[in-house]
Image (tube, rainbow, N blue to C red; front, side, top):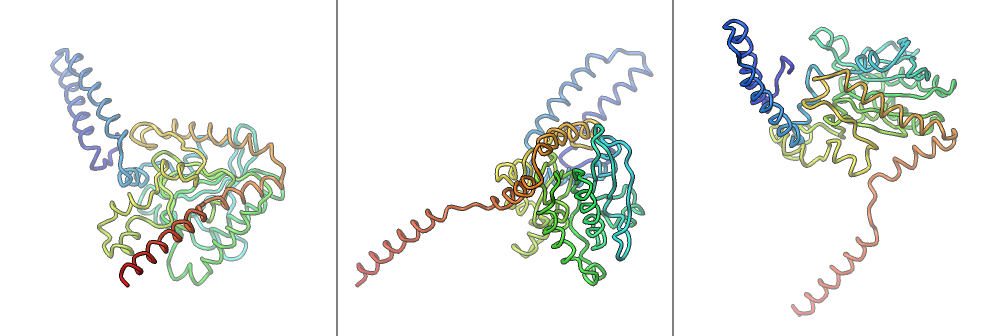
Length: 340
């Protein structure tokens, strides 16, 4: 387990402490506690399956925000070869909150783009907690256009609470930069695969998320707004974030059902931070599978596929609404006749 423990993980932590205590006692006293340790280990595994097999939306969000969770540079380290980072938007400057560069995955050249948080307070300040400024999105677009020109697939890793909402970002055109990315990404003539690796918040996430295939780690979330923000706006009470999290339907299971994402990537029991290498290998396997399928499409088919995917979201049945409206009108007319 990580040194940082979530509230619902405490029962598992207590068992691990007991196991460690028995192991230390056995070593010092030379008494055989192997049977007791084995029983506790079995109990711990059952408890973990029970806890992590029935997580609430709020608990999954807590895992998505875990400080030890792997970030973009971790995935690049484990699944990419020959990574070369490129900097700057050629207009204002560089943005460390967004990593952009060239790499290969199983000898296939790709362009990699992703949000990057820090591990320490100073690293988080340097990377602005993965909340990108306009120059970050313009840097990303520069690399996307490079990928299109040289026919290289694009892999993006989404992991941000949102784009930076500060005055400086607004002065430099935050909304325009994200809007331009949405427009340009929708018409790219190369395969685009996005992986939601942790938090996926608002336009900050979507600014690099208009993809042919949107994949999502099991304990990530993807939403137009954070649960805290939603609660503050709708309920006038940010403490109702847990209630908002359930209502928003922002977990991987919900979004797969609504066809917002295309596949859920499994994590080790306890979350991606328990075994980053295993998680990265799962990501690589799923990304490689979808990339192989997309590489069979023509440039025109890729753009059309992306258009069809996003155009199909939010489908509703207009006929049933009209029918229901007519039925309600009839009932209203009958009631009015009875009154008169």
